[in-house]
Length: 170
Image (cartoon, rainbow, N blue to C red; front, top):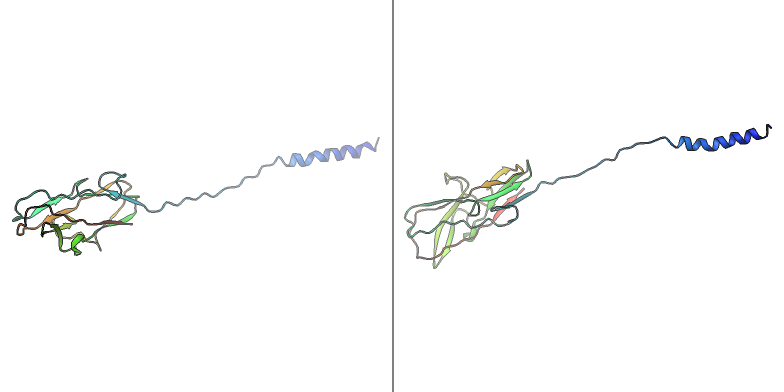
């Protein structure tokens, strides 16, 4: 009879590791995501990237008085949408003249002097080095461009054009 007892004891020990394995262990996993500063820009909506429309000074027969125009959405205003708290800068090139202080619309054998400004007081030329600086809100921010054709001798009739490059840096 005593020979069977050790076998029973060993048989019971075989089930003990299974009982001990029922314990649980927990651990954590670190998660990470980085959101980089980002901006989009255009004239009317997020899907028109890279296009700011046309700044139209209108139709005049004489330029003997200054002509002031404020850009509107789709007609010269700039839409910038940067992530919240993302600082950005908007620069406008000199256009065909190569000089931000002497921009020119070119037409049939003549030019019309004009310039673009950062505000309606027409004091600060919107240039390609300092431009204007803002901070993103995560929403569209509209930046009107203020254009002025100063009083000057009227050139020959025709269509006068220039192209400037708008750069958004963030």
